[in-house]
Length: 219
Image (cartoon, rainbow, N blue to C red; front, side):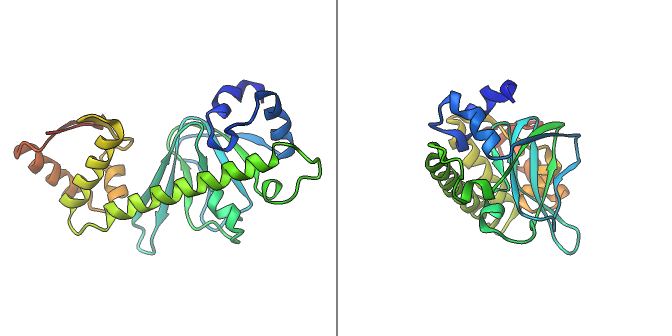
């Protein structure tokens, strides 16, 4: 576990936790590390919502699929980020989404009940851990509302420009990168890929943006 110390120190769950306490904490939480190849499911829809995870390397995506088979990317998960914690904390019986490795990745899985229930070892860091988890959930709620702001727009053009404007503000620059290829961007915006490509081409002709692969520039 020690080889993951640097990436775990960046994880919001372990904020303000002393490094010397980290290994004891992982043991207390029943931490286990697993490897997943690209496109393999970390959690599948309908599986029990008892654990949540931390991406140690690679990346993953949270994906919702409707009854017609249409995919929507809810979020992209990068190293040091948490996933599945809202479902585990809510103690729902089944996870309502798929969490799939977007790239080969190492994942640390934690038993949520070890956080929510009183620690029998009387660990001094337990209250800080609960506080960190609640803060993470609040941050994820804000990101969820940001996603709603994007997909609630009526047209592909409005959805695309709203999303790109948010990304530019986050980057603090007119030139920025997004974490999606064209199909993934279409899935995130919940639009048709061909319609998205046509809209990007139109915006380029109008001099509103420039792009190359996942790199964009807004004028």
